[in-house]
Amino acid sequence: MARLLRMVQARKRFFADAAHQLKTPLAVIQAQSELALREPDGDRIRRHLEPLHGTVRQAARGVQQLLSLSRLETDSGYAPQLQPLRLDTLAGDVALELAPVARKSGVDLGFEGDEPVTVAGEPQWLQELVGNLLDNAILYAGHGARVTLRVKRQAMAMLGEQAVLQVEDDGPGIAVPERDAVFSRFYRGAVSEGHDGSGLGLAIVREIARMHGGTVALSETHGGGLTVSVYLALAPVDESV
Picture 1 (tube, rainbow, N blue to C red):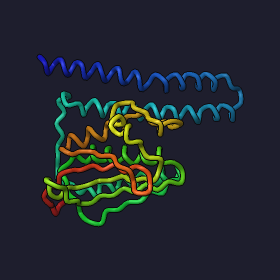
Picture 2 (picture 1 turned 60 degrees about the vertical axis):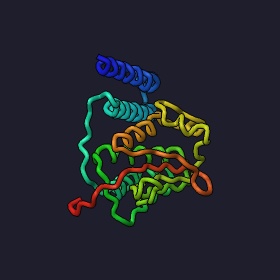
Picture 3 (picture 1 turned 135 degrees about the vertical axis):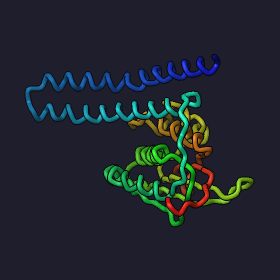
Picture 4 (picture 1 turned 90 degrees about the vertical axis):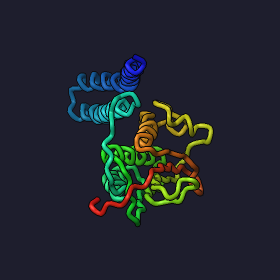
C-alpha cells in the first residue's frame, strides 16, 4: 500500500512538474503565433516563426527531460539493463555529435580519453548523462569558453580504482553555496540568468548516476570555471565492447 501511495505521489509530481515546465513556453508560442497570423508580409511572418521554432524546441526538450526523470524515479518500477560498455567510446561519440552545437555557440569543445574505460551501464542513459553535462557547459560557459570532456581511471581512497567522467569549463562557474541546490528540479541560479535552460539537466545527471551506482561532484576548475565529475565503478574488461 505504501509503495502504491509513493507511485501515485510520483505521478502527481510529474504532472505538476510538466505543467510548470510547459506554462511559459506555451504562452510564448501562443503570443508569437498570433503575431505571425496577423502579418500579411512573408518576410515578417518568417521573423516571427524563427523564435517560435526555438520556443517549440525548448518545450520539447523540457518534456523529454521530464519523461526521463519520471522513468528514473526510484518507485517507477523501471529496472535498467546494465551491460559492459566502453565509457570512453560512448562519451567521445556524444562529444562528436554536439561539436556543431558548440561551434555555433562559439565554444571550443575538446575530448580527452586515451585509455579504455569499461563500466556496467545502459547506453541510452549514459548518453543522456553525457549530453546533459555538455549541453549545460556549452549553454552556461559562454561564447569563447573552453569545454573539455574527459574520461579516465582514478584511484579513490577506500574504493580503489574507479571510472571518472568529467566535464570541465572555464566559464563563470557555480558559487559554493549553490552547488547542492543546482541538483534540484527547476533550480536556476545566478549563472542561469539570460539563458533558456530548464533547470533539469543536473537533476537528471544525478539520477542516472545513482541508477548506475555512481555519484556526482561539483568543483571549481583550476583558474576558474566549473568541473562536474561523475564517478562510476569499473567493470571487468570485455574484449567484445
